[in-house]
Length: 141
Length: 401
Ligand code: SF4
Image (cartoon, rainbow over all chains, first blue to last red; front, side, top):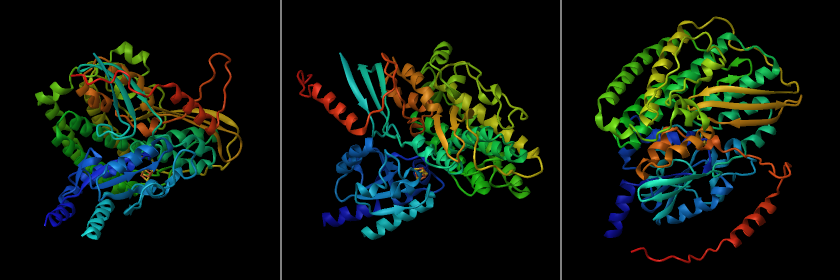
């Protein structure tokens, strides 16, 4: 019973943590915020942006992981309670974008964390992020 | 009793990875220090491996908010190296995009400032209006964030009559809304009370600490690259440099709102006086050996690129000094003797773009004057040695109560 309730609330109101993994250009972060703004209004799916990883169900990662930030990203990931979902948003988080071959970034966040959904684009449109979140929620159902 | 508090690198008040260490005396900040390097991506090194044309798209991705600033700065520099005179229509369109970008960046900032001041609905309002500008940019360039408009010798896409009309229509809407914000901000006592007097930076301090952009202009120094050293077509467009004398966060907000209105005027002027003719000219692929220093007034302040060419189709060196980096010393000065609760507001007031400012700095040995290159393993062993020296056990760790 409790389990069903928890599952129901998880699907109906996933709380997200927006994590900038370091080596991005900010474009994706701005588009995530734009997705939460009145025009696109991701909040109508119950999605709420949270400041702390301990409250979050879904981690939206943007940017390529820099070596300096690698351990910190892992630590944030470990703080998210189970079950956790990771969305790699943007070309940087997916595959390194233009920073591929740099001495200070990893090629994609999936080298570090298991990723549940990818959102392509540099940057993606807010609508693409909404699509990803809806697909992720459907797969959890 | 003094406390040391660390903020970041992952912290909800900072949207990007940067670490702030503060020494606190109760509520008051006595000392502050910034630690950078979390977002360093090695752009300057990557630029050396790519051709000039490819580098336009690389420099665009230095920053996601002022993407056009970095490409224009780079393109201008390379055009000087190539001794190429860009097409006039191209320059006008370039300036148009630059001003549209300034509008979107300032609206974004106003929203963030509103949010940090606890005025959430203001945040939602400005971000809704920002979508109008993003739509205009999307009509012109096909993208919301990275416009990819610049190329050597002009721009990549022309604009037609229909687009012109659409832009002018939407501009009316934006003007109306900006007037509304101006009234709102001027007549909302809580908003003014929260911003006034916070983050003081006197005129002398601002000059001594080399602040740039709205931070400098809000301290009463009328310095703007567009006026002082006009590039593109800024010498033909009438506009005023906006300043404020209050030297605080409120002044920075006022400067930005005034600049919004100036930008609307400029956009209108550009659209009405758009010259006929081609929008780009053909550019050579190779660049003669030379070096150049290019300046640009980005929404956050003066942006500087230094480019050195060696006769091939790749730059030998690219050095980027983004405006946020120039504003860091001033931020530290503003934070000192402020309150903890003001940190996000003061920090947001310089409109920091942290990933812009993450450059590698090479320090020469102060004694011998030599520069030295360390390998990664050397750095690692140095770091290990450093941490061995520190006593990590907490000696006086007693429960304070
Ligand atoms: S994917 Fe593109 S827009 Fe997004 S952070 Fe990377 S470079 Fe910026």
